[in-house]
Image (cartoon, rainbow, N blue to C red; front, side, top):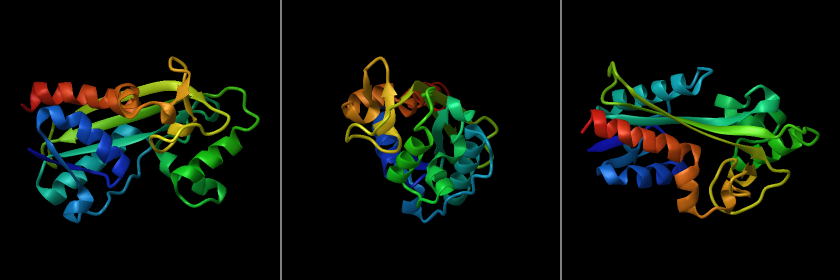
Length: 199
């Protein structure tokens, strides 16, 4: 079965393709089908993911899977949250992973409470009007490192220190990261939901 990923993020695509492979789903990006990105006007991950999934399904006529994910920093009241991808732009930098990390470290320079969570919310719909979307949430709590470490992953992986490993996500081998990441946890929950309700 073909499923449209309501994202053009190559990192997300690679992670989710690997995680959904056991079900035999062919995951294609909305960009491959010429589908524009959906607006994300909401303040919660689940609302934005649902809007993106419905948008991709409406434009493709196929089932769709959307992810809205972000970093929630305790010292910032849970922000940047749904604005994670644009975090750097609030501080005069261009949008991008490296700039997001730079801006975060600058803002946290004198902050002692470094606790943060990476959150991924996956939503899958069979059609634009699906009355029963599948919703799976994955959450990983860690601490923001004082400097980027590691070369794997993307986003905030180089500064997300995971206490049980004593390393950042960017230091972990890909298979270990995928098994323990917020997206990995959400994807496993989504796999179970898809097996139960779609197959």
